[in-house]
Figure 1 (cartoon, helix red, strand yellow):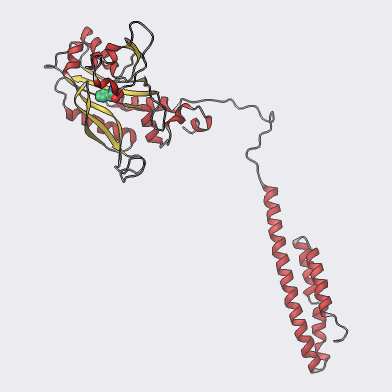
Figure 2 (cartoon, rainbow, N blue to C red):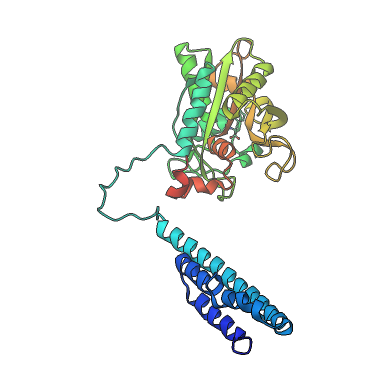
Length: 354
Ligand code: PHE
């Protein structure tokens, strides 16, 4: 038998059968036929006992090698088949969540929601109302007097450079403008209070402001501020600092704090810039806060007696503080919006996240 058994031929037959199998079921059958008990190779193995020792040894080695090759072929094909079957199953079971067949379901009623800036304004108002402030508003078109003059910024005052102003083609040149900040609403409130006996004042004034700024990641030419004004008896700088700290933690969270740094505004004296803990790194220092751990949010200070003078409030009887900061900037910081321009681009994918 040893001369007639073509071991290489058996291997080739097995190779062909293995290659032809395409399913787990088929490869199982192939394994039985090429390596099972009844396979030619197993039968050949059983007949070894009848051979001469030399011939037995020779054929035994050949069969052993052939078996190893066949087993390897089978193993390779088996794992190939199971990978293919898994891939087929996955493809068959895939659910296309983006699929939407027009008309197959009633069109959902699309319901919008308030813009993030409006939500932020509402949230800020809530915080201040909770602290005892009233909410007031004023016009977006102002005269030079309300936006500048009454705030101790006379014409040609160098501080006017702090606000790049849009003037309106209305009345005398540069007499009317789009307000550059919400501070003119302070003047309206104080004038009203004086004429109606409405002191003291504890109010916040949110609203839209305009500056001739090129839009960038942190500035918009049309933006929103919220102004705060307290005029009462015995108000001190400590009241201002405390108010800002309470607001900061109430709005941004208990681990976010405020600090004041000396600054200059014509309508407050002393004046400060207020900064809050960087909401990105929580004070550790990062790129956004230039490694300082703090981010500037707005300005504040004690109402300058010259401003009280302009509206007819007696600065010997009354003192007060004011502050103002960007609502858009708050939204940006609280939600970590890298570029503020996203707020005005009307990309629904951005807006619907909030
Ligand atoms: N109006 C100032 C600005 O827009 C901010 C400010 C408000 C500063 C109130 C002091 C007091 O820059």
